[in-house]
Amino acid sequence: MSENEKISILYLDDEEPNLSAFKATFRRTHSIRTANSAEKALALIEEEEPHIIIADQRMPKVSGVEFFQMVCKSHPDPQRILLTAYTSSQTVIDAVNKGHIDRYLVKPWDRDMMEKTLDTVYESYKTKVELKRKNEELFRVNSELNRFVYSVSHDLRAPLLSLLGLVDLSRDEKDPDQIQEYFELMNSSIRKMDDYIQTTLQYYRNLKTNLILEHVNLNQLVNEIIEPLMNYNSDVSFKVNVDLETVIFTDRVRLKIALNNLITNAVKYGFREKNTPYQICVSVENTGGGYKIIVGDEGKGIPPEQLKKIFEIFFSEGAATTVESSGLGLYLVRQAIDKIQGNVSVRSKVNVGTEFEINLPSLETNN
Image 1 (cartoon, rainbow, N blue to C red):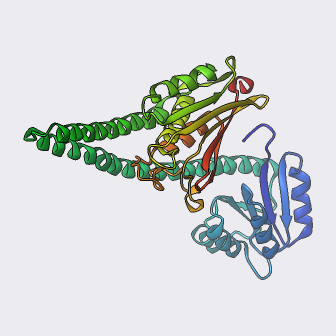
Image 2 (image 1 turned 30 degrees about the horizontal axis):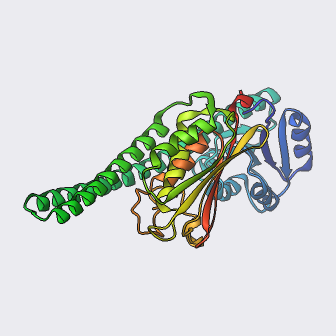
């Protein structure tokens, strides 16, 4: 809990004096909401889920245990405290077994005891919520890992088998033109394997490496990425609009992972027809406290139904083209940019082109 955040409590009791007394006692140190009926309490929970719910046991229509039975199904996270002036063993058993309460207090409550109880159950609440978050994250990572292992075995094996087949064919081939064609196909298979290995390394590096913040010259970084791509396709040209002195304080490795994937994808998929000239545009704009980076192409564009999926792991960026893709590239872009507290978005129009926009803070201002 942050310094300014208060523990939020919902207190349900059919007697207004009890509600008023509780609120008067704890309103300065806690965020208190009260309800005099189960219906009102449920509506308040739907409106905003509290950290702790306190309910009196003996109420007309719905008892405290019955109320908690309803709540724990739809809102399992809040801690539950049952109050009662009548301590029968059956009430305690029902409270634990049916209402799944976390604490049972006898009325009239003592302020010090109540305060200690609230602090204790709030710590339990934080632990439960954090454990839930970590379990969800673990499930997500395991799911991605399973898909990742399958993808690696498939996407690395396919070009390797193709390469082995071409080697066998070329052994007995006498025609120089046919041999040359085999060599070109071999080169294509090797490129695919290399691309996938590089992307896999980037995926691992982004996942495991801690942030290393430094001053990064964006003009130098963009040109460092573009230079080896100059010979990838003789039809591509680059238009770079980045001030020579533009410097941002960020993690260089992750920013390079993101920009390298966006620019490389633009080179691979940024054409409308093969063997026709096309241009990739990269621009950087100072937004005051950060920078906006745009990578655009004049290619076939991305169909609207695919735009929402392109940042998902193993969604193929080349789905609308004849170019094969690992499906990791744009997922890596989003993951890397998230790590450096930025955001990435995309605009695309079929047969017009695609623009990716990265908005980054200069992390120096955040430290």
